[in-house]
Amino acid sequence: MNYKAQLAQILATIKAKHAQIGEIMTKSITNGHTPSDDDEATITALEGEIARLEKNAERLQKLIKSVETAPNPTEIGGENPEQAKASAEGEPIPQTPEQTKSVKVESNLPQGIGFAQMARAKALSSKLASKGDFVSAVEIAKSAGMHPVVIAELEKSVTVMDTSNSSVLVPTSPLTSEFIELLRAQTIIDKLAKYMRAGDFNSTIAGMATGATSAWVGEGEPKPVTNATFNSVELKRHKVAGIAVLTDELSRFNKFNGDRRILDDLIESNRLLLDLTFIDDQAQSATRPAGSLHGATIINSTGNEEAQIKADLAKQRQEFIKANLSLTGAHYIMSETRASEWAELTNPLGAPVFTGLQAPTGEKTLNGLPVIESESASNIVELVKPSEFYLADEGQVEVSYSTEATITMPNKTLVHLFQENKEAIRAERFITWAKRRPMAAATIKYED
Image (cartoon, rainbow, N blue to C red; front, top):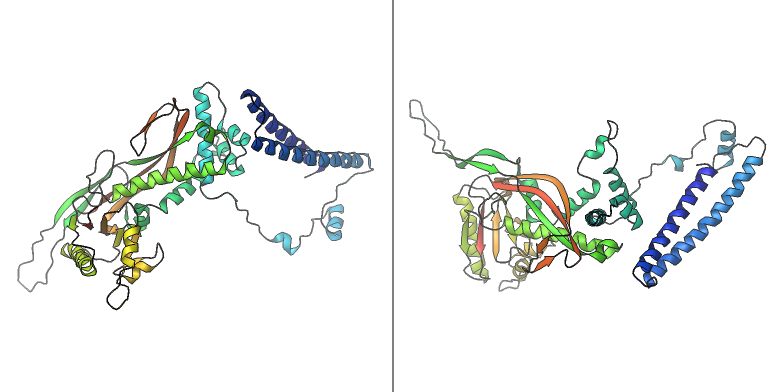
């Protein structure tokens, strides 16, 4: 980059920082007060940066003037005498081993925060548009000082398309992928997903409800007649939606903790609904998939003593054996609380009864089978075989915004967004599943 280009870049930066100070002052005057302590700190920092930039601009102006007045001015490249000599003679500048090393640039933005910032910028843009004030999400992100990665993603969405740049139409951005990755690390269905069979939305798959029979046949003897029964598995197009409700202040101001709260709320609302749906016993409908325990055997617990727990677990495994289901690949689902309680059970000699439950989270086992922990499974211990499920997952998230709806919160209270000067961000994910045959899970039920 030559001196003039550097000077132009510095002057543009100075202008942008003056604009930031102007926005802060305008906001304070509009609200009828002087800048707050936080605003004063921001203004002071910006003024210091402007002063430093102005000094550098002055130096560059002097350098430009000296080069323009010098005879036959030629900018010499290179970082050492050998490179400078090659540059002056028009030869390629020799590179040192350090310069030939590849450099990998990684974002310092915590995973998922970029998605939350992008959602916040779009939500505020949508809210302003509803009031007749059309400000793009890109401009909001820039004025709020959001991360450059977020600004770049938002700029892609407003780029004019042609045959050379249509790749930005691919709906899954890196920021959305981060959100999905964080969500998948927490839900029961996503922890089992890699063991499930792939399916497609709005499809019907022929399956076998009960097995066929085979036998060795001697010469001239009748062949065995199969008594297999068949069923059909329907995968609908279901979607799960998580909603985060924001105050006007949270959406407007650039607070890292606010972005973290938006992210956590969206993940938690999706996780809770997915977990509760997967482990319940409800049938499939037009709006939701069937729970894994729909049509499954439910065993009532006989107690919490060692012998009673082991007897219940043995009865549960027996249900799989009666259905000709191998335990290979099966998983237990239980709450973290129950796993912790069972891990502390000891026999008369003081040895742990369930040693596998003393392992770290994500590594626990019970009777040699992996354990998935979720507080949603508060009153059950489920044994499930994921390979007996079909899973359809679009792998994308659609984000919507509203400032006028009425939201029913988990505690059944109503939030009137317009009346309370709030807005809602909704993240929707298309995902569904269906059992390959009725017997794919069994559970032990405990008293609440």
